[in-house]
Image (cartoon, rainbow, N blue to C red; front, side, top):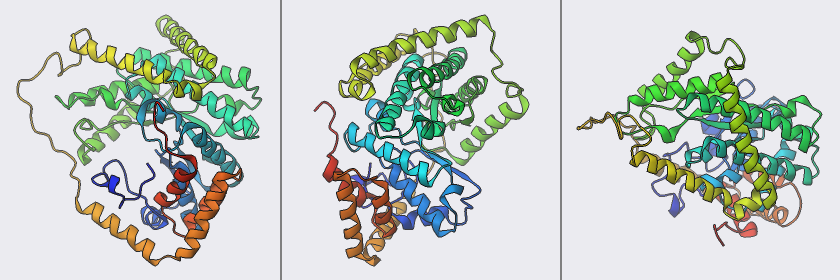
Length: 435
């Protein structure tokens, strides 16, 4: 959200959904001892994705690691925030500028970095159907490619670094069909709509995470089975990487025990099941092929409707995707309430008494220490130099310069994430839905 840990609105939030990074000092601490030329790092960050990426690059530079040696991914998918998740800051159009500036910056300085992970995961978590998940995500992907081309970038200069992020739910065959349909759709979009000639641009490289919204607080051990089915669907569908959720995530952050079971689930699927021994093992199944065709047709119908509205940004501004997801989420919840959809332990095979489960502990001292460190950074830095660098960020935001260049210098001089975000808030404004 672009707020430092000592901001009043951050009260009670620090450390709850990830590590707090307010400044270069925090990123140094986080990455201390890690060989950044030998590991790849994924950051699930969107509105402030440019800031976190620049801090990562600065720490690598201090370690003597060149930008050409850095590998990893920033999620950087702001459109799905307006659609489904809510952690946006600026209005859609200036946010799109930030994304295309990242594309251009990385093409020059961080050529091995995955500049965006176009995410259907959160769209599905908000209650969409499988068809809506891939349709709305593809529409967002189209918008990113169009924005980059409008900014003067050649499609094959950035498209090979695009990646996708999907959800995995419990209907194994529908999920496999979804991944297969998504691959076909993206290849067709890149070939027919954008005229890509680089085969790498047409590849749907994707990560999958098992469905957090499918996990239940009731009988949480059942979630181990759900996660296994979902992981299996992702592998059968051709995922390149996989995140398996902890069985206790309906209760809180995963405990060490839950995280280890999630890891072992992946390892059993990967090393013992045999499903990873061949590509697309369900290809040729009448049922799977027919279901793939059905999911693809449904997704294309949505994409055509969004095109007719003027594209994903216009559809978001009109509230179209949000309304469609809301209707789907309501229908799903009603089906559970009415007993038409069975959720084990929730509306069938329930237990009278609930057993207490261990929940990940949150240390209340963490926020105090983080606030103290951030205030110490502000007290010890060269304040005039920081203010001059932030003025350069403001000038770039009002003009056409790539924003990441002055942002990088401001962060190097120890400006905080909140301060850089505040400058952009001043220039771009803050998005208010429906206004």
